[in-house]
Image 1 (cartoon, helix red, strand yellow):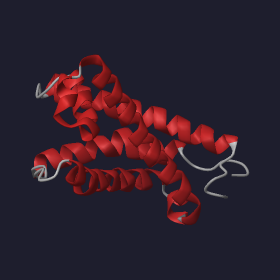
Image 2 (cartoon, rainbow, N blue to C red):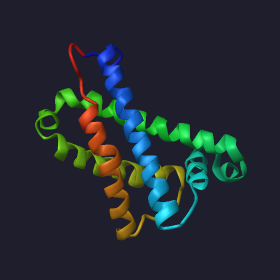
Image 3 (cartoon, rainbow, N blue to C red):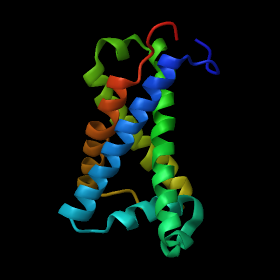
Image 4 (cartoon, rainbow, N blue to C red):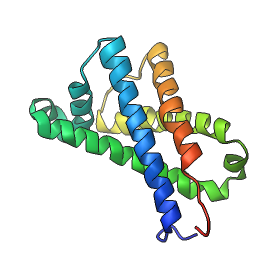
Amino acid sequence: MSVFKIGRPGRNAILSATLVAGTLDILAAFLVYAVILEKTSPARILMSIASGIFGKAAYSGGTPMIITGLLLHFLIALIFSIFYYLIYPGLSFLRRRKLVSGILYGIFIWLVMNLGVLQIVFEGMPLPDPGAALLGIAILIVAVGIPIATLCRPHGGD
């Protein structure tokens, strides 16, 4: 398998994983943080994602920034789906233990995002408290890690 040549079944697996994981993740964020915990609104969640690129201006950008945040969210889901697809053939563990792989991948994604990406993009951002971290990890395991591990694997001749 070449990194630059992924066949149609592989592209379909990546796209499916991206759409399912991206949708479940954003819906979980809306449900937990906007509806249950009442900490924010769905629009503000999406503007927050857009603020990773546009800074504070994202919060006053209205609908264009909401749409940008949603597109960026799905771009991130796509990147994590492609990464899983590419590492899958080289790690036999992923093939044998899909549920455990999904759990570990959800934890991995949380670590990459919270200890890497968000720390770089939002310099000086404090780490979440343990309760918030566990909630975030749980969401990523269920909404992103398990769906990607289930859907995003090479099929056929890829």
